[in-house]
Image 1 (tube, rainbow, N blue to C red):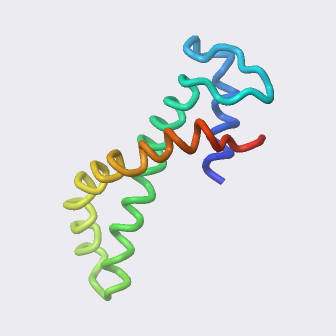
Image 2: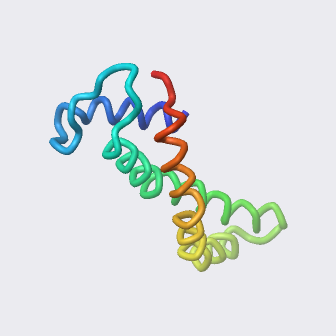
Image 3: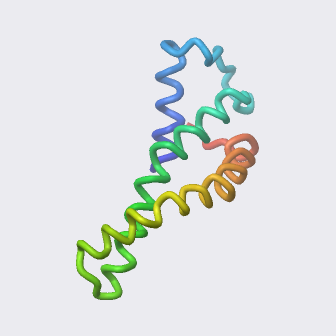
Length: 102
C-alpha cells in the first residue's frame, strides 16, 4: 500500500533530489531517507486518514454530513498534534529498523 509506494517514490526521487545520496541495496535506510519518509507520511498520508476518520465517526453515529465535516474541521489540528507525538516517533523506529523490501 502506501508505504511501498513511498519507498518506490523515494527511489524515483533519488536521482532528482540532491539530499538523497545513492543507496546500496541490502543496506538499512539512511537517516535522511527515514526522516524524508516520516515527513512525507505525516504531511500527506496522516491528514487524509485522520480527516476520513473524523468525518466517518459522526456519520456512523447518524449525524449529518455538514455536522461531520464541521466536527472534523474542529478536531483535525489536535489530532495532527497527537499524530506527531505518537506516530512520528514510531515511524522513525519502524522505517529505520523494519524497512519494507521492494
